[in-house]
Image (cartoon, rainbow, N blue to C red; front, top):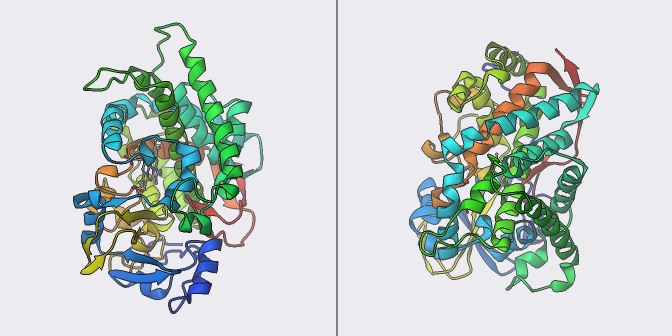
Length: 455
Ligand code: HEM
């Protein structure tokens, strides 16, 4: 099939012809935050609505989004509804910190994510991709959602701690996946809570998870601290332990190191594994694109890739990853809450108003994209960093709080996908659609089996 002439339209939840009534909206949102949108949402620059007394504004206008995420970011904070489910995963690390604490953390962590630093992690990405290929080689079929989850965890474990994925680490991946799909899913109680401690009676599973998760991360950090000085790891933990506050000269405390590690582990592998899953899914639906990518990868096999510059040898692969994040953004919604009343989109917003910036909606918006529901990697031809240059493309968020791990994620995902395509042809065992479900990340509604044939 010629992907340009007849692009595939991959599965997406039903778009309602008109806005849902409040009761239907609540029910739809609880089952899938991607399945509650009406046609209108994908055409308009903004929409305001009160749901169960909560004032909310969906913002689709790129200039207004820039105001929220950048020029007027001090007027907003992350709402409790978004913080509560993520707190047990990320503690007080960069993702959930605010104000001066966030600025200080971002400044300290930035050197660990420069291009030079990410480049030095490439051997870790190769090692994780190699383990993935070895695991896939043994079986005729694979649950790729699971396989990519383990592989992305291994990539981040190696990058953070120079660790390979042993049984304890595989258990960690399963624990996080289970949390995100169960206790970590936002609930109505999160929407109505006025403090992180409210509705403590429903928080038991979250607290139990946090205890186990933080204990596991503590063990990983403790193992490193127990090593003799100068053991010489080239990983992110080494850089975190070497960080010093610019004013006080103090290193990070144990809890700070633990929370940053937990944040990087969670933020780093949950998102990238979703990207890899959806890319594999799209390439199974579009066999011609998969063949084309394989040719590109074979012309410059993954084993030869040693620098970030080398990634330019796989331009089509990058376009496919970028288009995958457009159609299935790993983070489907960015939520903010007004802390200082002001006007946006000509609307006057009071304290507490919820502002929804939805990569899911923006990436399928009819004003900004031609044929928005179709899989067309060519639309990113020649665009090296569209998350910066394209105002309607927000897979990594935007403004000063843009994802710190964007180039880490793309380098890792490119190496992982190239390694798989170089060795295997992948296809779906069943024709049934796989639906995206919105939660903390964009997950598949079920984990399909893929045939994995050596080529
Ligand atoms: C495809 C992969 C990834 C996607 C789509 C992604 C997406 C995002 C998005 C949308 C945000 C902004 C959230 C907001 O403003 O509410 C964010 C922030 C963040 N991401 Fe990523 N991310 C990815 C990979 C990574 C990786 C690999 C790491 C670390 C190893 C990472 C670490 C972080 C951190 C620490 C933040 C918080 C930054 C701050 O608030 O200053 N992410 N990410």
